[in-house]
Each structure stands twice: as structure tokens, then as C-alpha cells.
Image (cartoon, rainbow, N blue to C red; front, top):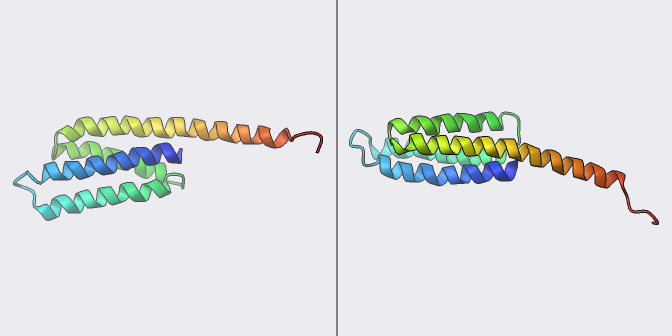
Length: 118
């Protein structure tokens, strides 16, 4: 699960950075506001790469997805991209867990069937 979720988060890191560049064109927002919010979100993406397998890591990832969708109020394209990344996040968590379960089953089978003749 860690690899799939981390890949999604790294993709979001770049999308948030590019959205920050687009948001700078809004005359109602200062550069400091844009980069404070974007910087916090980008940092959260990187931190979550390490926390995704810890308790609450997936929930924080969902909070980030909601914030990414909500950023569409500032950069309208983010409504679409936020939904796309939320779907990717769901797929990463769902299929990542299945892969982890399959790996655990395979490891358990390998442990019980040791090579004979040794």
C-alpha cells in the first residue's frame, strides 16, 4: 500500500505546486497567502508518504483529498483534478491493501513449505 499511496501523494505534490502558480494570478490573493497554503499542502504530501501505513495516515490522506477538491474554489480546475486524485487515492488504498494481503499470504505459504532434504 505504501508504494501506491506514496506515488499518488508525490503526484499531488506537483499538482499543488502548479496550482499555486495558477493561484498567484488571482489579484485578491497575495503571494504569501498562496505559498503558505500551497507549501503546507505540499509538505503534508511529503510527510504523508512516510505516515501512510501508520494509524491515521490514510485518514489524513482523505483530509488532503477533501482540501484538494475544495481548492477548486480558488483554482476551478482543481475541482476536476481533486476528484481525479481522490479516485486515485481510493484505488491506491484499496488495491494496496489487497497487494499487502496477497504478499502476507504468499510469505505465510513460503514459511510453511520449507525445502525438503536439507
